[in-house]
Amino acid sequence: MKMKIKLVGMLVVLPMLFFTYLFITQVDNGVTREDKLAIGQVLGPFFEGSNDGNLTFQEEVDFIRLVQGAVLGNVPVNSGIPHGMPREPNDLLARGKGLCFDRSRFIEKALRQHGFETRHIAIYSTVETGSAIKSLLTPQVRSHAVTEVLTSKGWMVVDSNEPWISLDNGYRPLSIDHLSALGGSGMVERLMSQPETSIYAGDFTFVYGLYSRHGMFYPPYDRIPDINIAELSQNISRIFN
Image 1 (tube, one colour):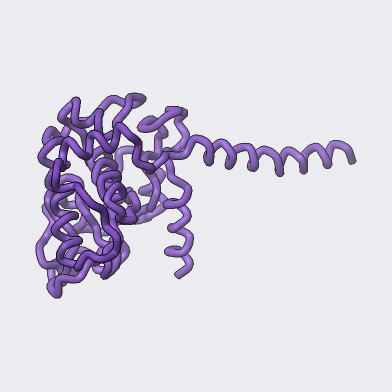
Image 2 (tube, rainbow, N blue to C red):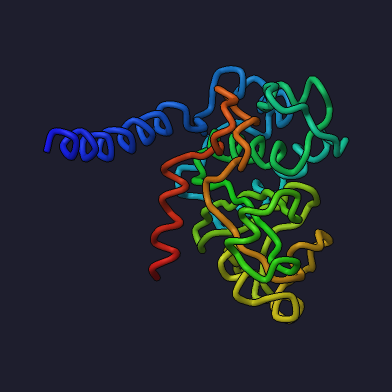
């Protein structure tokens, strides 16, 4: 009897400890003082003011494009930062390089600083595996990281490798969920401009709030996936809708 009580206790306590650890060590998407300095260095006087909800949709799009272009222009070298090393906006500016997941983080922080709501998206191709689960569990599967920003007309994808945003032919934003549902041929018909990044053209799955599967991008560099819990929780409503 005592053995069963101990076993039940462990089954309850261990998951609680694990989720507590995840909460404490999750990726912080807040904007630090160092982030603000880096953002100001990139955007300068264009970054004055904030999004108080009074911008027109065109003004939102113009500003989002400004942020995207500034980050792409200041982090031009498509080369990775070693695992286990800082990769915040000031680190990217100092190095002048980064990959899609680094630049998307920079874009997100700049947009958040200006009052926009964002979420980080990890995209994984399912062309090779034929399965979302297999793609998430397969090392080196083709992947991409982008930003989704909430505009007055809905969520819009902001690419981190090229100056592309997801507007349709009617100049309306399309979310990553819409892009996934459309598929490659559907996007050709619906999008105002086509992305060069090839992962959009095939079948893919995506996860909100997953910054890495290996846990080596952000402290404590512990081999446990880098996640943001608030963003990750948005996958639940997507799955059950």
